[in-house]
Length: 108
Image (cartoon, helix red, strand yellow):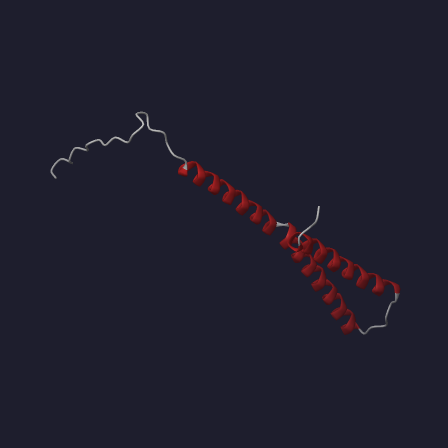
């Protein structure tokens, strides 16, 4: 089964970002750097921001947005099937349409 770019891209983006994040963490753990207190605080803030962004991206592609897209697709499929059902011809018992007189409303 060949994947289209629309199907392939979300997984690729998520795996790439998680890989980059893991590489940054491993590099920081393997080669400790002497940092001032301000630089260490900044580095921790940057790592926290990066992890939050990765979490947001994962939630966007696989979380509530995905569920919303699935819901929209289900509603669209139901709407299309009801339109087809309404557009199908209704058989008439006598084979031809009949007109019935409607009495006028009282006081008209």
